[in-house]
Image 1 (tube, rainbow, N blue to C red):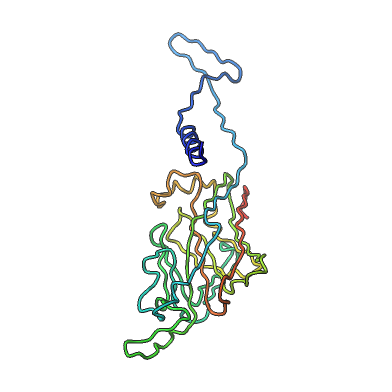
Image 2 (image 1 turned 90 degrees about the horizontal axis):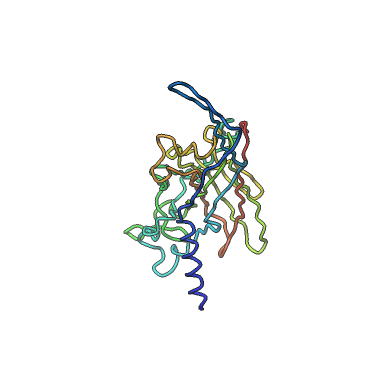
Length: 283
């Protein structure tokens, strides 16, 4: 039997096992209860649901690649947006220096950063729109006008955005999602400027900006006002998109941005670890 046929058989068996309807019989627990009356009888029952403590993460994007090769090549500088048909990456010119805002306790007293003054709007799950100083379509960045002259500011730094979904599960009262950066591979230079933030499906549309994430740093991705559990409760809220409803796991759209200015050619890396912690009291 070929390996392909064996895989098909195993896959079909697994699918059948998942789809089978289980059969259960009656149970007998606790002491008996009896009652008698002329025209009515009542007995009491206690129904118990016992669950183990559980905290879990599901990440299906274990590699997040910002490949800017499309900005190079024949015809440089490009006359049109090379990522126009991609839909999973966007690069925009910076407005200037990073724009920072010191946040309060609800945001873990962290500093919000708009990379190069750029930002994003959380509109319709799971899509975001990027606010920048024009679309970047060449690397190194440069734009020439119809008269062949340099467009002012087209050599400036730029910022690229990508997103992915990280699913959270917690059956505690509160949880805390963090991202820690610890670049471990000396073979590759580190990404110079990286930024990150999370948006739960239950509260999409309330973007909170990003946080810078240099090597060795850790950031809380969700505000304290939104980190209540169990996670299955959040997908029951009125404003939850239909695609996110009916789940015990909570979809979280993580936004990652990199500012391009002083990175080396070739592959640059950042190594991130996402950690979900649970507690029955606020952190």
